[in-house]
Amino acid sequence: MILVDRISKSFGSLSAVREVSFELPSGQIAGLLGPNGAGKSTTIRMITGFLTPDRGKIAIAGHDIQSHATAAKSQIGYLPESAPIYPEMSVRGYLKHRAKLYGVAGRDIGGRVDHAMGQTRISDVAKRRVGHLSKGYRQRVGLAAALVHDPKVLILDEPTNGLDPTQIREARSLIRELSEHRTTLLCSHILPEVERTCDRVIIMAGGQIRADGTPSELIRSAQRSPKYIVEVRTNPSAGIEHALRTLAGVPGVAMSKPAPNQPLDANKGWSIIELEAEPGENDLREAIAASAEDHGLFIRELRTLMPTLESLFVQLVDTAAEPVPGQGGEVGA
Image (tube, rainbow, N blue to C red; front, side):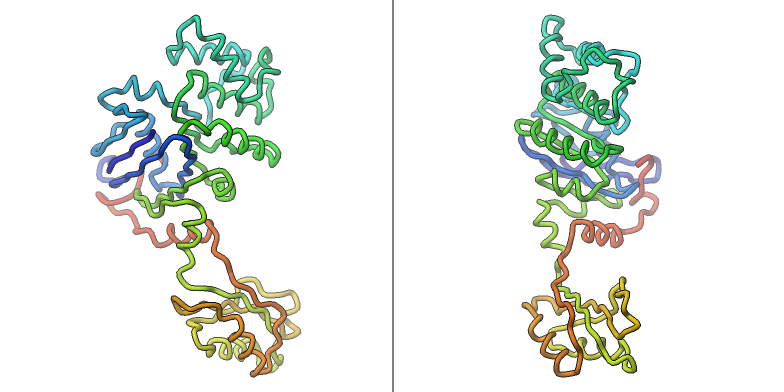
């Protein structure tokens, strides 16, 4: 339903988006992640037709966004981060207004509005002024406005921003329900929400796609080498250096270092050490425990350190090439 084929966009000497490609089928919820300046907002503006790519192609439900702009845009429901909602209008009045702007036939407007309110569970506030609603309800009104013309594609920019935990759970459930027969592209900086909501995650940095896959696939890819957390007690006179040297000598261990967060009872000889295995090594926990025992180290905890989407995100952002004139960077976001 969304085809993005090698699109690029520059602003003067700064390249905001470089050779970005992806395809999203119907029924898929994809999350677009990236730090400020990654190229996310520029990419979204091109997909929604607000910006024209310098190169490349974008198609929405089979319609080219440039050569068949009207047909393509009619299939997009867009909820920006700051939804353009008029506070003095009633919910029903506002949705009727949006339906007219989308070109919905007059005879169909009432039914479309009722259906959109039912989908987003706001029928009970249809007569209330938008400005008198809670943040959560206003966000639902914005979502109903994006749905009122029955689009095949939903693009949601920070849909849970500013919501409380209960509202976030409700929004997550609603997004998944509404996306069952649509293609949904969700932009967010809240990594746990993307992981819980999306079937697929696309990470951008420096104007390029750095990773693309399901959350579980991306997390597995982040584990290049197994890592372990070991909490040990040593002789206070020997200190943590003795434990570091001992555990670094375990066959298959590539590196040992103090973990960032040391225990509260560190003054009693307890230390937390992070170990990284050589690539391709299998489970080293038995070898680690045996070596510790042989060298007089008492282990209180030994566990595998599992990668997270957040750790992958940080890794990709940190290793992304610094933008230079004509090759990277972004204007706007």
